[in-house]
Amino acid sequence: MEHPKTIGKYEIQGELGTGGMGVVLKGWDPAIARGVAIKSINKKLHRGDELEGVLNRFRQEAKAVGRLVHPGIVQIYDYLENDQGAYIVMELVNGKTLAHHIAEGDRYDIHEVGQIIVQLLDGIGYAHSQKVIHRDLKPSNILINKDGRIKINDFGIAHVESSTLTQVGDMLGTPHYMSPEQFLGIDIDSLTDLFAIAVIAYELLTGKRPFNGNMATVMQQVMNVDPPKPTELNENLSPLIDAVIHKALSKKKEQRYQSARQFSDAFSEAIRASLHKESPRTPGPITQNKSANGEGNSMLNFARMLNADATQSSVIQGEPLTLTESPISLDTSIRKARILVVDDDERILSALKSMFRQRYHVFVTTDGNKALDFLRRYQMHVIISDQRMPIMLGVDLLRQSREISPRSVRILLTGYSDLASIVGSINDGEVYRFINKPWDDQALQTLVSEAVTIALELADTKSDPVGLPDKMSAGILVIDNDEEIFRVARELIGGLCPVYYAADTDSALELLHQHEVAVVLADVEAGEAKLTSLLKLLKQENPQILAVVVTKAADSETVINMINQAQVFRILSRPLSVGLLKSQLHAALQRYLTYKVTPNLTKMVRVDPPTLTHTSGPSSGLMIKLKNLRKKWFGTD
Image (cartoon, rainbow, N blue to C red; front, side):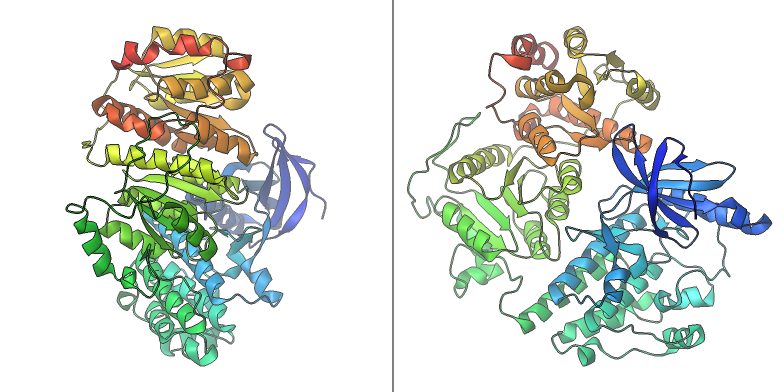
């Protein structure tokens, strides 16, 4: 079939495959040099009411997913329609569907199944929180990219709670993965998605679907028959898996898990039990810096040890650390800080325990869920997490740890360049620094010492929630070489605060001296090196000002430098999601007001100095011009 050379601004490079409603094309966005996938519907292949129904479902998918921004969900960038067809422009995922892997005979070990299902539950749980129900989860709608991350795709029959597109009596879905209520055509909710995920989990763990046959047979089984226990088909599984799957596949909705989080927690525990049954090298309990057979394995002993800190004056004395240059005054006598390290590689855990246990209380685990549970019980000053781990990715761990323990300083270890995860860890986890593997020991010791110093200073800092007023004097400064982003931002912010525009860094500096600026919204491609230097120096001299960066950069190293050296508040990719931009600008303004009430909190956004203090190149002259801003508008030196 011949395809058009262009659709809107997008160049068509070929065909990726066929979907439930039409062809999926490979496209190219020349404006930002990015590959995209374009799902298309050919209007000529449908007539009358059929065409209207197909288009309604297509538009519904764009509406449902367009509001979802999550690393586990394929993002929608654009929706187009012309006389020939309708098109959804979305994220191009470099990977294959789970169905493809299954058809190729690929089998996943218990670790991998745990990782797949927990990621799937995390993504669908987020969709449910946004009032979106997928209703057709199955292996062909689950993409696995090359680094093992899951992407939920094809919300073609998704339901938004405020929508009346589908009514009671409609039967939508794919038979082998449909819930009893879908077969009955009665009103459905988020538990339908969880039932489908349970079917997928059963299939991955056992190599067989729980319900088989033609549609009538499958329907009869789903409604009336319990499938064989997973342990009967896979002897390496724990009986806990049987209990979890049985509950998740209950015929009655009220007997199932009532949320993705509940299902995820129970499934993760069952996976851990299965791994323990299969091999001694499994995600285990959190241990303190003692032998695995000692008392350090007991949560009770952890609590006793932590409570004893108030009466004990010291812990094991260690050799003095050799530290590299740091932008802050480090307290090298600290002995009481608590560090939590999460990594699936026990060699990494051992290395970090050996490096830090003589100075701090070090707790380690290979299991993200146990780490979060531990955080709910005990305060940790510093959290160090790997990115690629079974059960839970580092970006997800840090996002949840931020909600549980906002004063903890978060550090992400990464051994590969995964741009989406890096951006997610900034926007969702607000990491303090990234550290690449293999690390330099002295640099890591300095970084952790910085983090500990900051965390201890802030541990008892009280900060009441600060809401946005109807109007505020501090404004937003947009730096861009055209006024596109400025016009959008001004429209979104309305009368909340002033919005200023600068076409270059020189104009930006003038405006920074003339007006109180809370947030800088910058297109990093616009000013190139000089703009990047401005953002770095601005954060060094004025940490209270928040930077929101718009970028089309595909270089993860560039993004890492922006967080390590400029502590950008958020990174947004082009094309911009208007709703996301508005929410992030509001969040940045709210954070600025929080810093005004509690200036001490700006210590969490200190930046690396090495590339900032030179007096030549793009940074020349910027430092002097920026030094007086903090005192002028923020009232502090």
